[in-house]
Length: 289
Image 1 (cartoon, rainbow, N blue to C red):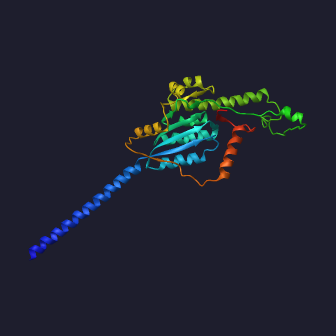
Image 2 (spheres, rainbow, N blue to C red):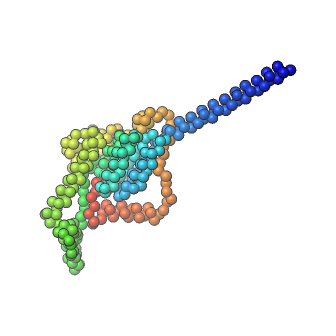
Image 3 (tube, helix red, strand yellow):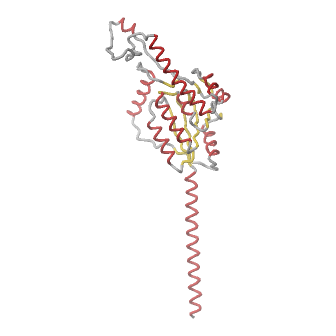
């Protein structure tokens, strides 16, 4: 009787252990699958319109860089460029990120001037054959209204602390000395652009200088010049990202968190972009006109 009871207890213990082993195996297997799925993520950061501010894009790049589940980042670019300073800030943040994660630039309809500057910080650039790109150069717009003011009887003048303080003022002609000063500044900023392209695309500076005259290029032309790596669409960029980080099968694309929609914010953003791109106040721009 005691022997039968001992055998029964042993059987119950073994049955319980088998049940516990099966339960734990399923739990850990499920956890591993979920972990695997969670790791198959690629972050997508849209860069659209005129580049007038860098803060939101930089925050998103930083968030994806610090997220271990994001294995690569795709910059989806549709932009003619924009102001020099925010363009350079975004470029620097992408360069910093590319040291830790693969970054691919996917250019849609247009990715020229400052937008191409940004793309050059990525590991690879993908663009369509008909994409508008290139436009390596810098511009500064001025408005001259001296004759108009004269016709309507308005006379403007400035009291200034130095002879260059009202440089580019719309109520007077620019002097030759002022033109040379502005030109020297533009050439230095252009050289910064050329160096960024040469470094990012692994091209000799002299080769980049030959096409750094502001010309726009088709994606097919840019490919022949070594300015982009591959002709293709957004899905081709996704496939390239998967290949670079060794992801097989399906991948989850993660986009920035969408904030609360505000018609006023959209309206103000559009007005700001327009003012920056067409203002009489001189703004250094990497932007096609």
